[in-house]
Image (cartoon, rainbow, N blue to C red; front, side, top):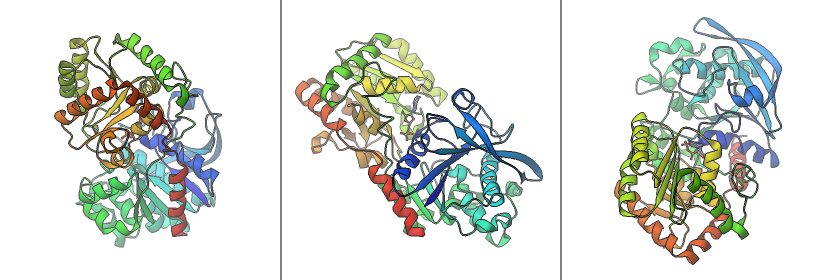
Length: 469
Ligand code: ADP
């Protein structure tokens, strides 16, 4: 079975969040079972493409968007950091940007990427059984292959859409419909959702199967999905929640070159101690106090707006240290920077993206905070468990599916509301566990044994593909 994953992110080539981790690991595990999976993604003007890889030209073609022609090339990526095939779409001045997202012409970027893939498949007679689309950036592909005249040759190809995050839908107004290639106008209604062209909604309507990255997230989306709840309810027959896995070879405290001391279950206590010591030296924290971390986008979905108040209250009431790594809303960033001054030696925040620091945090903190309002799957909690760090989570989406509260015989700390009170109460519970050294250490060892690898989930995707053959 030949699968082409179309995505805007893929670790380690270009990463903003969990989408990259999934697309950068799922194909590897699918290739170990009964599939040949490749990834196709845009070229970026970043360190990986410029300094850590080479490309070989495979094909050059032209696409048209609203009377403008764009020359694109499909390249094969050569890098010893990747162990599955990656294809690149390069379009000068359009898909060779420094960053993955955040450009005023992003609608054209997404359309150009999708059209280039399909144009190449048609012109070179390239045969895939399934195009697996990831999020709204690629979710017009199922519509294009079904209804656009120029892609008629592909109309029997099956498509799967995975929703990693339904908050972002790629919406644009009807007066920009000329950006799309010619299609049978009888189907114009398929593009519409609440009087706009909605790529994610279109993908849900047209894909052969739709998956979400956890079962609980699918259930939640049927109730609340930024306007798509009714659609997801009506299409539920073809939807399935499949929990993301983690790449246990990339996320392995025994081999991770980005941490200070490697460790496995047998020496987790000394291993974590050395990594915590490094963090404490860097941020002038007291190594004997419980250390809490947070890694992620500073946005409402992650409940990051609650962090400044929760941090203040938690630091005023308890003897603890807190470290934040993330970037996002300026207002939250500014509040955290202010708190850094106020609580020097007890709280710090690194505003930005830093893979190495994130690994050190997973390895060195005692608890990882994830008070998310929305968490489609969440990978951080699974990385934390793998590194012997206890997750503190709100019971939502994939967090609910992967973390069981210590009080229920589990290994994490869970709360129900996205509120300052809930976060602070969970921190107090965490301190109690931290002080019970024997119990705390037994949990650290226990959580490192939990299997959140792709072994089960990669097979579930193959079952989905087989169900449409
Ligand atoms: P998202 O909703 O952002 O995709 P996920 O939990 O699915 O959330 O994935 C987040 C991924 O991004 C994890 O690998 C996490 O370690 C990483 N990450 C998030 N923010 C940062 C940051 N500021 N620096 C380094 N890594 C980060």
